[in-house]
Each structure stands twice: as structure tokens, then as C-alpha cells.
Image (cartoon, rainbow, N blue to C red; front, side, top):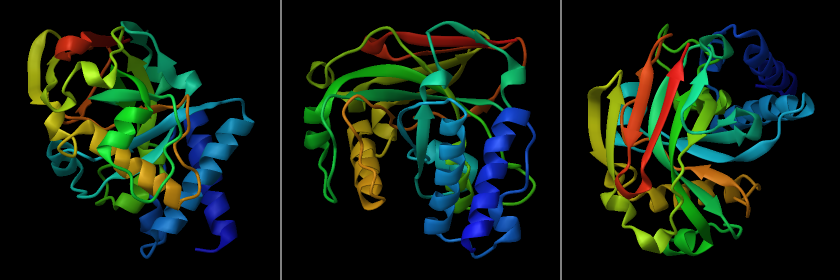
Length: 262
């Protein structure tokens, strides 16, 4: 892809966020799209949204659990940005019209107190740099068609890792207060249990998932920064939502997070 093609695709994806219309994934037109080109498209999209008034709140990693990888048929992580304007309080009611093709994931979010900058970052460095961890639901949303043809991880990266919104819980805990690998995830839809998992399902440890993301964004020249909220990836398979749905996940010592759609 040349620079003009990258910019055109990035602007189209940003426009999708406003019009709620999906487009074909980049690899349909550019089957040899590279990781660098995919991230360049993402950057154009993100900066377009920033110019329109959105502010970056942090970064996210996805496809870090076996459940999510099987669901997407993509077997390596993706990554992108989260926005303040798409952060909601626990128990929020969301409008379906604000999304294109929303699905819900359940994960832990890390609030950083120090930068994470380096090509080799350990889980201990992640925990030392973390102010607190909190339960989170993420609304993943797809500006590209998800089911027409097989997506590549490059498609997901270009689409800002399908970020749509996130809902934070009410019980922030310091990393040393709980073993993140043992945190239970009990996910319910409309008061019926959907899936049970635990923190170890996410890259064996959600802190290791954040370490991977920190290394990747260091390579991209944009390390994780103090004050950012980092979404560490879902321990359960994402599920499609529709109007009338109530979704809740309990996270043991982190309490519960819920949302509804109308």
C-alpha cells in the first residue's frame, strides 16, 4: 500500500465510526497488507477521531485468550487505542444505535502510574508500574465486515482492534492484593450463565498480556504511559448483543460489572 491508500482507508474507518456503516476489510483489496501498513491505517483513523474531539484514554490488547482466538480464528494478539468518550460507568444502559455490530468481552483493566517503555518488559515491571487493577467489560465493535471472508490479524489491527467502548467496575485493587491468574470470571447474559473462566486464560497472566502490549507499543514508538487505562484482553469468548440484553460478569474480589442495551 502507498501512503495515499493508507490514508484513504484510515479516513474511511473513522467515518464508519460516525456513520455506523461497515466496509470491507483491508485485506480484501490489499491481500498482502503488512503489519506496519495495518498499524499505519489505525493511526490515521485514530488521529482523525482525535481531531474530531475524541481523546485517547489508553491502549488495548485483544485475542490473548484461547477462547477469543478460536472465536476469531486469529491466533495472535491485536492492539489498539481506547477513548475517554467511550468509557462508561458500571451499570450503564447503552443504545444499540451507537454501535455497528457490538459484542461484549470481559477483562481486567490496568491503570498505570508509571510509563512502561522497553523492548523486554516483565510481569513484575507491569505490576510495579500499575496504580490499580479494576474489572472491565469491553464493547468490541466492527467497522469492517466480520463474517464475509476470513479476517487477518492485520485487518483487526487496522480496525483499531475492534474497540467500541468500555465499562469499568467499582472495586479498584492494588496488584499485590490479589493473584490476577486466579480471578474468576462468571459471565451471564440475561441472568443465565454464559461462560466461566479465570485470569490465567489471558496469556497465562493478564500482567503478561500487558507486558506484551508494552513491548509492542515500544517498538511502534508509542510506549504505554502513566495515567493510561490498559485493557488486558478478554478471558471469555465475545458474544453478540441485541436490544433488551442485560450482561453481567462477576470477578471475585473485583466485584461485578454490568451493562444493558436498548
